[in-house]
Amino acid sequence: MVTPTSTDGYAEIDDRSATIGVAEHQSDDRSSDDPILNFLQDGQQTYFTGSADVSMMTSRPSSTEIAAALSVAPGAIETDYSLRIDRNSQAPSIKAPSRNSRVEPGHAMPAAARARRRPRPFALVPRFTRERTDLPRPAARVSLMGFRVDCVTEHQVIRHVIQSIRDGRGGWIVTPNVDHLRIISQRPDLLAMLSEATLRVADGMPLMWASRLQGTPLPERITGAGLILSLTAAAAKAGASIFLLGGEPGDGEAAATVLKRLHPGLKVAGIMCPPPGFENDPLQMTEIGNALHSAKPDLVYSCFGFPKQEFVIHAVRHRLPSAWFLGLGGSLSMVSGRTRRAPGWMQNIGMEWLWRLGLEPQRLFRRYIINDLPFAIRLLAASLVER
Image 1 (cartoon, rainbow, N blue to C red):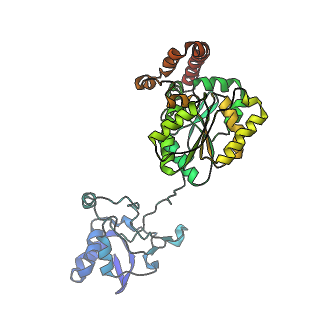
Image 2 (tube, one colour; image 1 turned 90 degrees about the vertical axis):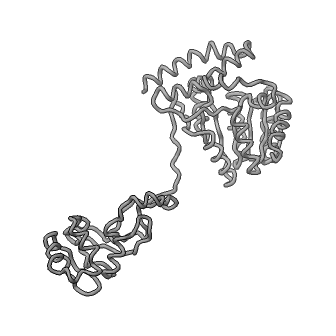
């Protein structure tokens, strides 16, 4: 039963029978109260339970306001009231949100969908929602033979790097393939050093297959040869500069020419190709650090092959903490055109190593056939067991 205590509001609500009684004996005095009484007659009283103390509302709505509230469409702005739960339930007072909580900001419901939805009865009763947060979640990582690889796409890597450059923060990207993973598994010191890298992305189809076999699939393969092109394109648009370090003599200059032709606004801060054995010469290493410190590039492509390029990065990156360092192996020779990359269909089925073996059989036969092939089989078998 709804018992008015004044012309401005209602003090309490009783059971259905009392409500029906009021509807039958007070039919002449319903005028603006029809919506709420009709709703209660339909048996939907459960929106107000016995523990609700409506008399504790901070601002008592009039019957006209109640009728208007009943017709509020989803997504419309609602009047802000408070509803205090009965003292016996020991629950705190809760403030109703100023907007309909069913519609998130920026996700307005189409008009057709709003028309199909029934108006929410008793819009004065607040809906309780969790507080949203915009804090980014840390990227997940997949463990392969004890080495953790980030579950990211190439687009996510590029976006993260460019945003970090704008914020003045540097980093380090490692692109391991199956040959790198084999070497890492044999050298704990190398594993500890590479664990300091900001991002570790899978450059090799065997790593992708292994992640799928163990039930933790990586989103996509990110090759160094592909990353040098896509990241350079993003750097040119953002006004960031690059530094080409390593490769064979002449590869850096040829690659810079190609990249500038592709992206006319690209800034090449420097090109350097140290002589063989430089990594064992402290003076040569100091010269590399001084050159990077003077040029102040945003991106440094270290192309000496694994793991030499990673040792160089680890030794000089402290001289330029705001730059991003990438170990990209033979990417400069591919960009310059000196080395042809495998066709797309061979890359997609994981046979790029066979293409490279055909180009350089004497240099790569032992690496690919004698060393990497047995390790790849062991990697896939271990991943299948860990599933």
